[in-house]
Image (cartoon, rainbow, N blue to C red; front, side, top):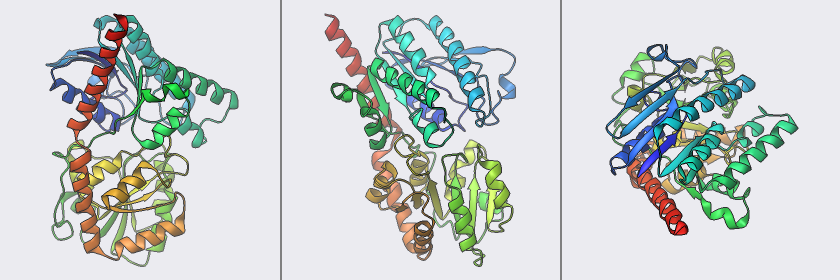
Length: 419
């Protein structure tokens, strides 16, 4: 098949989780002999500005063994300025769509959201090619912006919801990451259209991220670099954004203030970074560390004795923290503060790789943390069980195969109805 994929990030823009997801998916589809055109942004995620080596031209085109990559100027803005960010996404989408018109015809067109505007661009391009349109939703917009209080104007919210539903109705298939998101999206469609919503979970690179055995006995370079030798490290690693309940880490650090063997680490950057840094500076047992090079991710994940997954109340239906998969691949246990019954809760319970507690519940969070840190041997065993779960369920090959099967189903269905 000839595939056209529109996404906000692609290699080398891999600090964005969606960049790694789409890169691996494309490589997996290429191994199945599909020809692929990727339309994406010039790399910009890390500093929210176009990387120096990529400046000077509004777009670039590269040929690859499996097809080509077309990169458009992303009109970069900060995450905190929602209006400017929306205009930037709209501008980048318009430019990307214009460039995609020069790429010929395709058998399937898929657009990734967010930004939601890429869905409209993909739909228009699919109509031009008379091809199925697949709408890939990583986070559900505008739900996540509304739940966070970022989007508050009732008229804007109503308009955004109508736009969201119109995309769902126009899509031949909608892919989501979890059962929570599946319930969310199907609830916005007529009952007869619910079968168009498919769950295809993101993957984890099990070859790149592997368990580091005996981490408390053999300190890794990341621990040495940041003075974490001999410590029990409780880590949050990922986007330091508005969706996460970082106040729980502050409460935990205060709770453990008299025990200098436990260190809390916040590894990442994002819209909430400066707010977290203010109170972290007042606590000796909290260390703030910026994103490191991608090659260091296995080392970073392996440095923690316990990882945290934090998501504010009500957000699990619109956002699925894929950081869980990297934690499982690294063979590390998890403490999740997230909506009960969410995909993360179910995975943690099925894999028996940690504990989950209700979101924003400090007493429950502290009790679970105390229980986990009281038994180092059981922590290590939880990590091993998590790795086994990842090896069974979360491979890149399984994801690529699932998308290939969906694309073939849609193409075959369109051919049969046109006869």
